[in-house]
Length: 93
Image (cartoon, rainbow, N blue to C red; front, side):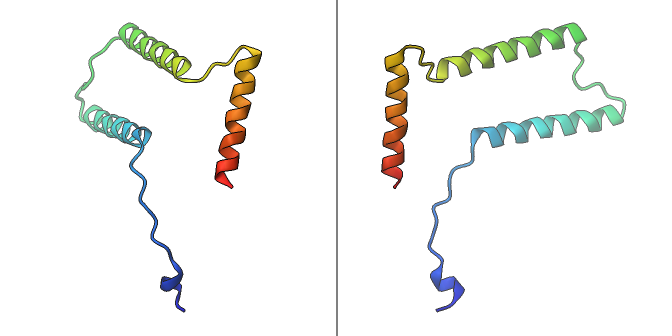
């Protein structure tokens, strides 16, 4: 039996959103670098506005992340989380 006969087909997972976002940011940064090299200011923005935009984005992402995560404070909620993890491990076996 050859090596190719023992391989099983594997489903290709979708491209993650984080991969797309990183790629877009890299393209923008690269375009900005090239334009700056030729003396063109592609993103005419003051440091104050840049600070405000970055602060707003970080604040927004922090709120969304905090809202999305399961924040279990009570004892019963923490026990339920542990039970859920236990169930996931049982299904994985």
